[in-house]
Length: 182
Image (cartoon, rainbow, N blue to C red):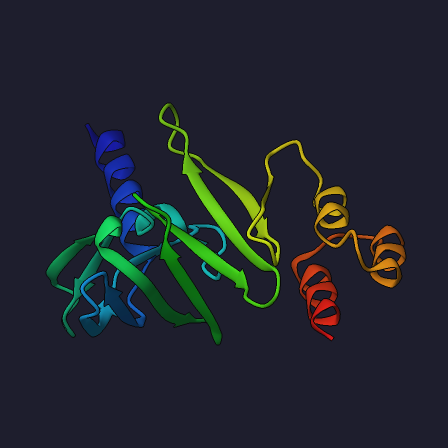
């Protein structure tokens, strides 16, 4: 019984420790704008990492005492914006759930989230949309570099730069996309 209580205490403390309440702006599909705090979860081992599974399907608005005041389904949200750890994050509607806006320009870059039904883990995929509206998806086994080469096929200078990238980190891709704008 004593071990059970310790286990219960650890589990409950981990659930409450990982919750943050950043101020957010929610634009609904009806163009109503709501400014309120939202409840998000963070990684228990790295509190700087947002756990998207806590809000990508349902956004929970809370008051100043962190009590839930409204629950909004992702399908009713046009755009969600909040700042966490000095980083502005924007999510847009993807039909039934939200996807993160990584870059908007001539080429758009989105991060798509899917949750495994068995173990509730999150899988991330990236999607590029070129100037013609053609979509290029990067799944778990597709490479960012190879997909980016397809998207920027008509710019030889950037193609060489993409091939020479040591990593295809988010910052590297954003720099490439910014150069493509010019």
